[in-house]
Image 1 (tube, rainbow, N blue to C red):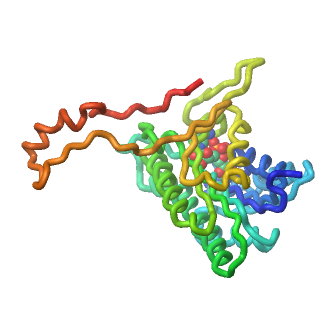
Image 2 (image 1 turned 90 degrees about the vertical axis):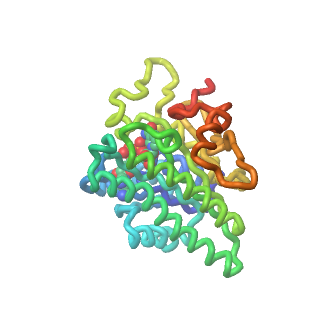
Length: 305
Ligand SMILES: NC(=O)c1ccc[n+]([C@@H]2O[C@H](COP(=O)([O-])OP(=O)(O)OC[C@H]3O[C@@H](n4cnc5c(N)ncnc54)[C@H](O)[C@@H]3O)[C@@H](O)[C@H]2O)c1
């Protein structure tokens, strides 16, 4: 008996890296999985059916159920088709894991329009298109009086939370995904659908492109940067046990899961019953930043382990 027996999941970008591990874990817990992957290069160029097909074969070889989808999840019609494929193949949709992603890193002053557009398109529009069509399906079900089980699990990044130099496009998309997650969680709460996001760290071709030998495994030690370490969080958030967990962001890697407090409020100054003047603000500046650095925020949360 799996935790997700009878559930139907879509995982975007599931042909490689983190998405592959998410799909394998969901299937091992009994979910029927639509394995979506365009199969392009790490920077979004090209396409290839093999990555998605190979993951379907792995799931089937392990006794699970899966079907491939080779479309771009950021194409509006294709996203609608992806949701429809889950319904047509397995009779419904319960879980959406938005994971597909690409990179086009450059400093903002060197980044061209296509670098910006393609990264925003795959990540932000890709997440929104899937959220829109899945939400539409669940809302129609709720309106018809049918029971709804709904989970959206999005993929942000610490770059989106803390702003990595050289990733204006990627960080803006990943930060937008956090806002999208919170909005979605609020909008779908009344029909019992949850929306959460993870900010993972793992050794995949994506991080190899950015960091080179990122998280190299030390012989004989726990492989903290293995992509499979992240998947159990997807399984948990997809499960009935996480029904009350929504609108949250988790930093996940190795043996660690950290829940984020996002945009907590800092110092405040109040001019009373009149508007501030520039001179008044110059004077109040010290008070406003009394307990808070006025310069760059720290880049990464420190690990607790
Ligand atoms: N690896 C990390 O440390 C890390 C850190 C933070 C965030 N992330 C995020 O995790 C997600 C997975 O990344 P990964 O590291 O496994 O990279 P990856 O390159 O190994 O996998 C990404 C997959 O997405 C697919 N894809 C790309 N564009 C697509 C599209 N339009 N439609 C469908 N599929 C598409 C690719 O073909 C690829 O198989 C991404 O959203 C990434 O930004 C990864």
